[in-house]
Amino acid sequence: MGEVLEKPAAAGTVLPILDIRHVDKRFAFGAETITALSDATLRIGKGEFICLIGPSGCGKSTLLRMIAGFETASAGSLLMWGKPVAGPGPDRGMVFQDYGLFPWLTVSQNIAFGPIARGRPKAEAAATARRFVEMVGLTRFADAYPHQLSGGMKQRVAIARVLANDAEVVLMDEPFGALDAMTRERLQEELLEIWARAKLSIIFVTHAIEEAIILADRVVVMSPGPGRIIADERIALPRPRDPTGVEFNALRRHLSGLLGSHH
Amino acid sequence: MTALAVRAAASRQALLAVAAPVLGLLAWHVATSGPGYHLIPPPSDVAVQWWDLAFGGVWDDLYSATLWTHTVASLSRVYGGFALAALVALPMGMLIGRIAVVRDLLDPSLQILRPIPVTAWLPLAMIVFGIGPRSAFFLVFLGAFYPILLNTVFGVRSVEGRLFEAAAMLGVGRQAMFWTVVLPASLPSIFTGLRLGLGFAWVVIVVGEMTGVQTGLGAIIMEARQLSRTEIVISGMVTIGVLGFLSDRAVQLLGRRLLRWSPQHG
Ligand SMILES: Nc1ncnc2c1ncn2[C@@H]1O[C@H](COP(=O)(O)OP(=O)(O)OP(=O)(O)O)[C@@H](O)[C@H]1O
Ligand SMILES: [Mg+2]
Image 1 (cartoon, rainbow over the protein chains, first blue to last red):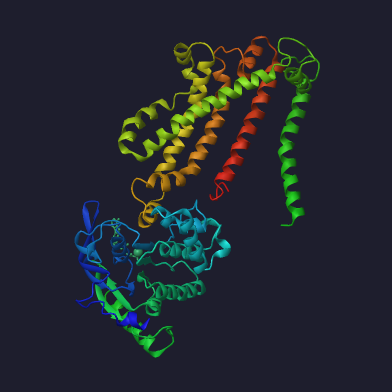
Image 2: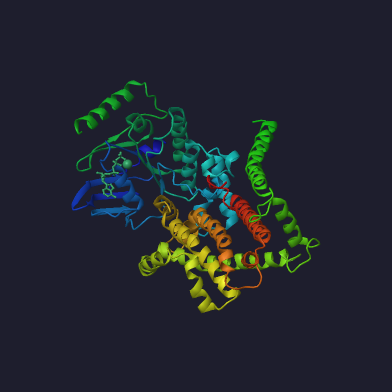
């Protein structure tokens, strides 16, 4: 993980996996227009773990949905490996807060969905699904349908589904928001493990400052009205991080201050 | 629950389900078996008549042992009309639900046609299709058509937007979206439509067979009415009720198998 931190994400010589330049997003709202995002600029290196925090309505989901290709920018550009993002694609996997699993497919079929959609042979897709079902610890539930799973289990399926599809960038919109503290902690650990192993680039939206400090290489802070990026803090603490540590608390105070002063 | 408790609950439910018809039969018996009342026959007379209709050997008249023939005739119309309705309504509903031009073209007309009851179509059907089974077939078709159509339209229109996003980000293209997302997601609604449609097919079969066909449960009910053979009328009614019930049960079982994933059906 150390080498990931040292990667010069913003250096001119290395092509960033995601390059977001001066992006605006405006929504028509009746006769008015709402500026959800104003002049967002962000470069993300391969293998970086970014947490996006900010008060409700500051445009976190909007930014994530634009990277995913579900929304188009009103101004500016979004580049992945230097090429403009044009619509959703399997290189950018999204983990939705409400999971978005296909209710008619079992756990393993949900995970095999991506590979099959991209034309992989059935047997290969099934083998991939088996591997990722095991990875997220759901082997016993491989043949269960989503409505038979708990929230934490569904979230794991949603993560496995994206990983099984070879996503390079994983976009997560408050994925653990609806879970209890214990499940949340366990999934955070699992996510860090998977992230390090699969060399993923992750953009993770959260409301919780502590969660951001536990997970991120960089915490990007946003403020509302209109949504802007107001800070981009590198977290250099070694993992696993101790939320009771002195440095951790200093960071927590610092980020709370940033959030509070821009309300 | 223990196995014993499950079995106790099941038998309690069965007991309650049987209680109402038994009480009804009793009331019917008490009300009709006294001397001097002859308009409606008592249940025992109906039972004898039903036996004769089914197997013969009691009255040995024109109707003895003909139940099978009439049942087959009605079944073929119910399922034939239903199948044709499904064949037309399913694709039409999918097109109306997913393609705005088709919706704008067909929806207003269908909304006007829909409130017209099947019975009101009877005279026209007889002019167009003549007296006989083709009119009956058409009316059954009409009865089954709208529930299938409306539920299919509803099903394909109310697919959760999130599922399209999920499929798109996993690599499903625009063309493949229909088969991979729309169709499976709308299966529960489509299934509800088919079930209602089949139910309506049974409901309109008597009207359908008022069109002058020779065979069919509806046909003997209408004929027996003119001959004041009320036992036959009631026997026909009971047969339709039981067949409709069994047919619905079969569809329900099928649904439970196919839609195991759906919390409402599984
Ligand atoms: N489809 C839309 N139409 C109109 N306005 C929208 C739309 N989507 C988002 N907005 C507006 O854009 C702004 C940012 O919304 P967004 O969902 O990105 O906020 P958020 O930071 O994710 O908030 P939260 O933390 O509550 O999820 C809000 O003011 C919202 O009302
Ligand atoms: Mg949001």
